[in-house]
Amino acid sequence: VSISKQLASIKGLGKGSDMEKAIATLALIFRNFSDPDGKLEKTTAKNLLQTQFRNFTKGQETKPKYKDLLSELDEHTENKLDFEDFMILILSITIMSDLLQNIWGIEITE
Amino acid sequence: VSISKQLASIKGLGKGSDMEKAIATLALIFRNFSDPDGKLEKTTAKNLLQTQFRNFTKGQETKPKYKDLLSELDEHTENKLDFEDFMILILSITIMSDLLQNIWGIEITE
Image (cartoon, rainbow over all chains, first blue to last red; front, side, top):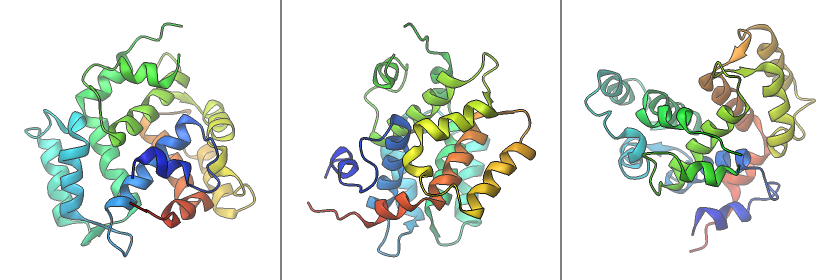
C-alpha cells in the first residue's frame, strides 16, 4: 500500500499541511517496518538506511562520525528502536549529510 | 513556491524515497521560515506550530506536558532554533499527540 493511500486513511489528519504529512510519513514508514510490538529491529533499521535513505547516507560510510553513529546503534541502544530512537537516528544522519547542504543552498525564486 | 517544486530542485536528491522526501520537506520548511542566519525565531516556530502543525497540536494546549514544552522553549533555548532544535521540538509534540495513536492504529490492507 502506498504511503499516500495510508496518509489518506489517518483519522484526524484531514488534508494536512506538508509539514504534517512529512512527519506522518516518517511515522508510517516506522510502523510499516516495525515488529508487532511496535519496535524496529536494529537490522531492519540499518536496512532502511541503506535502501530508503541512500541519498542521505551516500558518501558518509567512510566518515568517523557516521561510523560512530552506527556502532553506537549496535552498542548502546537496547535490542530494538522505538519511534523516538528511529527519528533521532535519521536526524543525526541528516545533519551530517552533504545533501542537507544542498537543501540549504537551493534558490527560492518566486 | 511549492515544496514539491523545491524538492525537485535539490541536487543529489534525485527521485528520492518517501522517507528522504519527508526529511527534505521538513528541512525546506525550516529553511523557508528561517532568518538569513539560518535560524528560526522562537515566535516564528510557535507560529508554525499553530498554522502548519495544527492536527498534531490540537487538543494538547491544556496538557501539562505540552505547556512544559512551550515554556522550555521560552526559557532554555537560546534566542533562536537551529534545525536540530526544530526537529526535536516537533518530534516531542508528535510523540505526545493523539494523532500518532491514530497513525499506529490504521489498518494495512494489501
